[in-house]
Length: 198
Image (cartoon, rainbow, N blue to C red; front, side, top):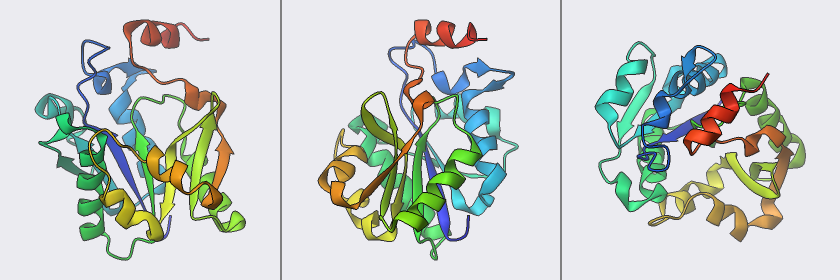
């Protein structure tokens, strides 16, 4: 993953779940451990930033042995934009030669390191500056942005996530089919359904 970083957004308070979904266990690991281990399979630890916010003391304790950078977004309640900014700022400082950056979340249990590799290949072959995953009739995360879009990512405000930049630059977007990306865990029933999958 030469010159490519990843920001994992995990700052929210999981209001619909009622408990931190970062700490839900699936196949023997918490969601946070799963995405961290997946990222460490292909990214150097210096290229990974995890953004925490709500209940960060409790949540960070499960990955204290992982050699990645954690940034605490004290302003997490203002919306996703502040977490993206915290992550971009930290990662740019740690990894100034970064040319591309993934933005990902921790509640997509079917994410694999292979998906990140394929998205990177697609960016190289398509010549597009943004590569997004496509599922359930939507374009979303994980999403890969080239350096051209670092400044617009830093200028997002409030509840705006990376989707705003995707929608504004559709002529520069390539999508990658990730059907199981539609499985994200927001409520206790989502989680129960996931656990009952074969």
